[in-house]
Image (cartoon, rainbow, N blue to C red; front, side, top):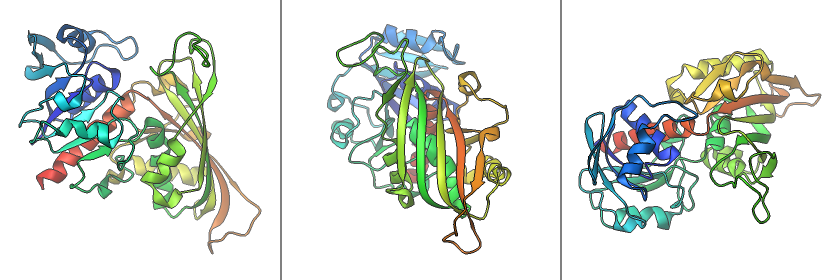
Length: 346
């Protein structure tokens, strides 16, 4: 009941999702990728230039099988998920290619795999519900067979916002700017109407503001956001300003809430406190939390208005949330996979 399949295991999110799943005690028993079996082995076993060498043993059994830490993993190479036969032993598939993010696309995994319980899309999905650990994971309905794990940016802002809301913060408006590392969707050199990523900082589309309100419905219509891509390979930062009424109006009180949340099981270890005076990508890379709060950047100013909530104070609150946009979402995906399997097993 705890057996997992990975679609896109040779890719960066697929590789780290498999690694994190094994770390949680889940069994990865099948994988699909257009890469050859030898290329998959190379991807999984090669020392990563960003994250170093992963602590696992990868071996080739035959052209259709590899071994991870002694556990055999059946390999196939299908372009169309409808042609993948995950087998009776696979209960859940993590869809990590970034290609099948619609409900119709993700549902193809179910076509020839009657034993498959659910598919989780690692990226933002269309026409499906999204869930993030520590935010709305407990809203998951076991009858749902296709769900999304939302984006890394969405989780980086949703987790701390959920902490504020849980502690009585009445939010009226949120503005978010995210500085995001480069991704494979960008070209290294100028191409058509897009500048190359190697030496430019540019604005980019972000659906994180809208997606956050899907995770936290009370925020619908209250979020706006901008994104900037920068020429780094990993490590991103979200700068969030919240307007609202709160019983906790100093930066110290707000940081205390984040500190308590980092130890609270409700938030599933998805929030982490960084104590340094300045936060940079080397402080972020390798930390698998969804939100790394730079506590010395938290600022709270009482506004000269009458609060709508009696006994509260109106404030403008700013916090900075860092996130490893590769390791963070992979860990969250593994945790959500574990949670979904646990709901099935009840």
